[in-house]
Length: 295
Ligand code: FAD
Image (cartoon, rainbow, N blue to C red; front, side, top):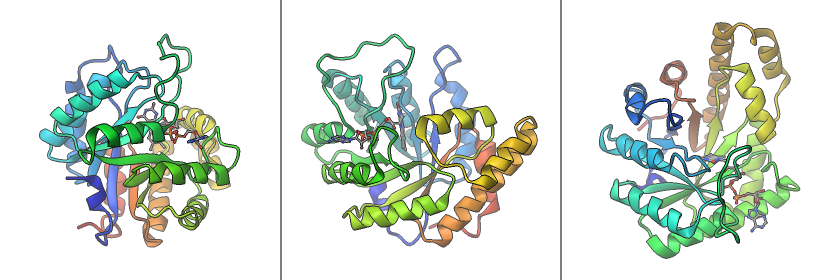
């Protein structure tokens, strides 16, 4: 099934994001137990991230295939393009197609810091929209295409206005749905939805929620993506950063609170950045089982 068809059915589309285990930390079998846990929560789809160096490409394809074929859950495979050649992209897409994957989150990616990698010179793809046009040209409607969006603007962008103009171009190239960057201030998200709609972006958008379970990880991620941290959130980080169990409890409640507000305001989808922790996703979903409009 194509993910675009999950939206607009009067329910909140619920999805989880997982990442392949790091190279050297075991085989993809390590993720099977986690997928058992996630599958019991009945998500509409699970997305599988893609390492920008290309070193874990095979794992993304295998895990996305496992989600779909062993767990019967719709799978969204992330594919980045900045450091890839057209040939590598074709290999990846063919492999995904052979694994029965119908949905791709088409991303630019970043140059991985401090790692040895080779990049094509000149670049084969500069922006995600180049990848989207390439997939459309070579694969037609084989895949339903999603793309990333940034409620507070992409970190490299001069302004949110400019970023939304670029987003509109990207969507018009052939995007069926968007998945947002994490955010901790829902008001920023609502402003972004309004501005996107005014710019003529009308595809469904899932809101990215990352429960804080580790203070250091959140500081790193927020530095990379520039998300605003509300006072209430900073106080939680400051008070519980040395007490992991308390931080996790507070993080789960903060994410729950965000989601209740989002669902109450009729967002189309919630995408939980699970950090491969089914027990965290499970607590959130349990907290709001009557609030989530599920089909
Ligand atoms: P683009 O849409 O190409 O945008 C990148 C920048 O270029 C933006 O500032 C945009 O405004 C600007 N821009 C776009 N088009 C133009 C144009 N025509 N002219 C001038 N400027 C333009 N990274 C990974 O490595 N692996 C993953 O699996 C992964 N998954 C992600 C999932 C989600 C939901 C999100 C939000 C991000 C994910 N990322 C992932 C990170 C992503 O690769 C980075 O944020 C990257 O910096 C931008 O990717 P993009 O696809 O949004 O790029």
